[in-house]
Length: 519
Image (cartoon, rainbow, N blue to C red; front, side, top):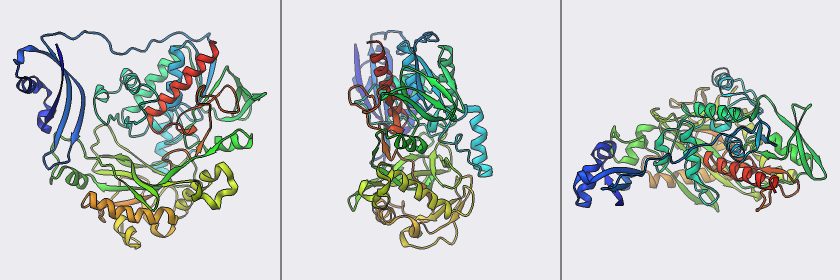
């Protein structure tokens, strides 16, 4: 017999899983010896009351042995002689599209503007230490996309579009910890993601797929509104049966290229703000109602949202035990993002704090049409750079000083390696953003007492939350509404937000490509 149970455990009890049998036997009023196996289905933390609990859901096998079988296995086929499908971008959407194409018997040819993981590390080090930004190899561009050196959060609400379990199972198959299959908010960690990306790469190559690095898309080859191939690095032509466009939300040059060629694109709402950093022990004390966090609890996180003057203001990509990184893709701009290692053991907690923006907010950029949101984003990133001092040093301000409209006389320690400089963010951030941030921070302090403190610092700007452009596609075929054979995918196309939803969208596009080719 199998029975699903829900346990509300202390952090200590939840950590020591060897005692689950005894706890469950008491709850079900059965003998401990009758329990053959406890299969944990999910874990989550309930910190709403002073006594923090860990909620564990499990499937209990009572006087019954579970079947021993692999829940998932990736079937690598040799596709070296199969029809070639071009994939632009080796981020989550592109890589998972490639894996799905292989399963469906088609050959992926991935075109990536950046470098492989190993070479990319050198360029990322140059950003942090020397403030040198390679526009094609950075935190956003390169093998694995923005996901490779990111926090590795795997939580998504995109459950209706595809199988989240399948994506998590694939990640576990390629090297992620098995806990991602049961944690309520699964997380891999920036230190482990590169190895997983390398394993995925090797699987694609072993199957006969191709990956071209340092290969930048510079044009589409289109005949009678049908894409036949692409041009890379301005001179090399590559042909394929279809093109999956999975470039990520930072590839602004692709949006300009599409617009120049009169290929339909649309303005899309997005969000811009700052990244706020607190001492992790302060967030722990607020969330866990304690002076010192239990060794059996993870670094505490938070999620905050409020409506201010008709716009949502919310925390984004909260990174407990993490650090802030420079995510610019060009020299004369400042963009910040956050991430955590798998252990989440940094003494800092950071989160984006962003304001929702809509079409009417870009009135001054209206002459840019569907690119007006992109023009707005670029202007703010340039403004941050002009207020940064030099290089990738980020403009910063203590958050109480920001609310009070006061320049910070000094700044606290930060995890941001390129360094920070005191700047009046309250003065130069656009009013539609700054005014709402000030009001929201006060309200957030009502939800998390102690959140609004000058121990915390904000860095500008957090501007790459999602794409400011959507590339329209047919709802059924997922092809571009105008150009046949072109399949916009993932975050850059405006259809995903994060690793898992991007991977799901990449797979969906691969499936639609296979359907069309095999008709």
